[in-house]
Length: 313
Image 1 (cartoon, rainbow, N blue to C red):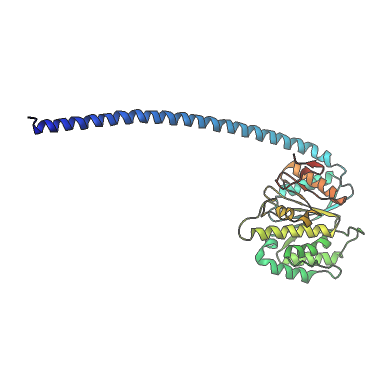
Image 2: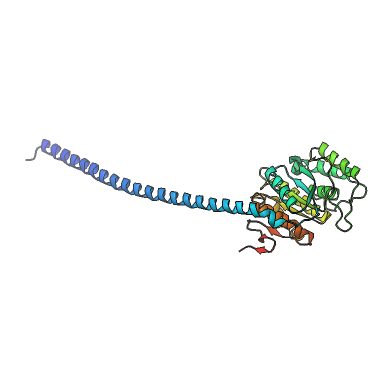
């Protein structure tokens, strides 16, 4: 007869055997898993290294391209705007380095910059739209007529356009120096612009902006700048709206213009002004404006070409 002790010993032996088997099995499995994970990690490290190398090579090629364009840019624009005048309008998020580079290229092209006006953050603030409209109407010179549109960007462009640009048909100022000074002083006092001294009306305008607007009211901010630039274009011989990366997005001023066929039919846009190529194209687009043409240039998906006469591949 098998004793109870025998049963206990037998069960204990089975349990010990099972435990040993589990330990041995799990150890083998763990080694297999670790080995596999180590192999996967090594593959990922290799892929990251390859991608980093490719990225570095691409960055080097882009830097070389920028250096090349920077060196040939002055030659590419030489004489394109000979004896022409240009006024610069910048938004609060425009990069001063882009402005300075554009001014240098305009000089290379033979143009003279007649003045600079900066639009402040308040200019495109939706909460101050009514205040901007009121001050525009109050400051309007006697000989200037506002457009029928009632949005703040168009109304502000209807005021500043004739002040900053000469008439495209007679090449004469559209307001007196005193009227221009009074209007700019009123807009400055209202906190909507910052204007330099001695601004003279020009034939052409560049409206320089940053990237996409963000935060509350981003779409309204972008629309205000877009409609302002479009109305400025209507006031003289032509204008170009130039922006940085993101400016052609839905909440970017250029994106708003490019979504409006009426605006794109007259206003030229350049969406990569922070690159040497984009700045050269901005000057060439001004020349195109003089010839009564317009275009959408840059590297964004809604551009029609890299430059005037160069279609996107």
